[in-house]
Amino acid sequence: MPTKHLAAKVKKAVIPVAGLGTRILPASKSVPKEMLPVVDKPLIQYIVEECLACGIEEIILVTRQGKEAIENHFDTDFELETILEQKGKRENLTVVRKIVQMMNIISVRQKKPLGLGHAILCAKPLIFNEPFAVLLPDDLVDSQIPCIGQLIQIYQDIKEPVVAVEKVPTEEIYRYGVVIPEPVRDNLFKAKGFIEKPDPEEAPSDLGVIGRYILTPEIFDILEHIPLGKGGELQLTDALNRFAQMNGVYAYLFEGKRYDAGDKLGYLKANVVYGLKHPKLKRDFNNFLKEVVK
Ligand code: G1P
Image (cartoon, protein in one colour):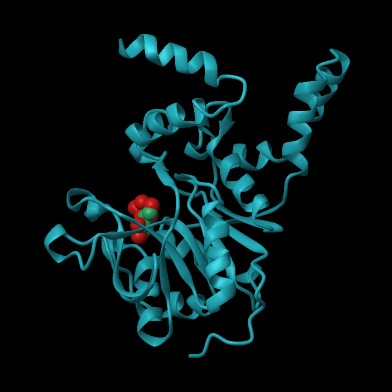
């Protein structure tokens, strides 16, 4: 199954947001976890900004009932804008309007909770014969070049799917899709296969897949034909494993630090790190943290 004749430019990104957010309950009980703030912006806004910074032109949200707040965040709020205008709050108005103009966002519903692979499959009708990015909104990556931009650069070079990986301690490997790697060059590996959430003793490497992928549309055919995997869900990792056995899939040890903001500790860490970088807050926040740890 050749991966050929595809455009080099990655113009679309799929962001699955239909998850329940059980790892961060009760915060996510009635607020979508993607709307939880890291400092002063909801998680999803960081992800959309990452796409914007890398030339992506359209976002496909794979969502479900009860998560409308995400779409509303990127839509015009006439009442709010009118009040801000009347009160002369220009700075706030600019911030609010900028979010609306940020990106063309389309949503599609995932009608059954059948896993990440199924969520990606729901975006099939909106992806044509083109490569596309997938970003999992739990993962915030603090890096010089946005993580998805790093993958786009690799994709433009090799024209095959590529996933971001990081080195994961043995005791945490059971939470990740893990790559069977064959070194190509610095930080780049050809994947001989993938295993979703292996037991530590079965893990083929310490390279865990994080929530950034560049995929090609062949993945949909595979997702349509593979059986349900771990947890009774359609696993993207299983489809990548099949893809790797037929074609090339690459794994890139990205530059940067990833925070799993869908997890309580990861969420706290992200708030501290992003708080310490916030242009208006960093000085006072830094002083405050020094006081606290004293
Ligand atoms: C998903 C994927 C897994 C990947 C992880 C990265 O798992 O199935 O392969 O390593 O995201 O965050 P989840 O965290 O949704 O269980």
